[in-house]
Length: 175
Image (tube, rainbow, N blue to C red; front, side, top):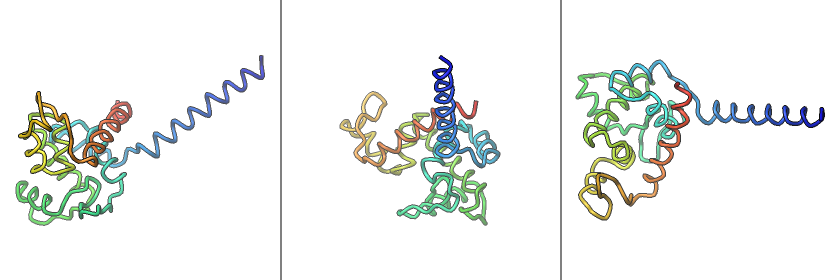
């Protein structure tokens, strides 16, 4: 009986350790001050912003996508320029952590407002672009009953799933 108890306790410890390591390494929380500041400023859930950062860049502030998106929140330079103009910021560095998070939060807030707080549409637009999502919502093959029923880009479909999965994890980490 004593041997069984030792094995059981060891197993529980081992599983707990693995879960902790997965949580720390696969779902880190970095830049929490910046995420909280700009989430609040732009009326977003900080765990949503953390999820997007994790999916977009894996918290690599120097990330560059194949398409040329930059930084933690993977913003295209042209999008960053538009945001800087709207925020009346003349000099900025999109690779700066704080700037990247602020601009990403601004853009995400803009998308949520544009799509009436429909997170799926906002995430689809964040990944595939506004023009694509606007085409989809005007096509019955892709959009019905205020829902994307068919996403023609597999990458975008997977992106939405990843962000939503991350959101569940980060929701428990932020609370």
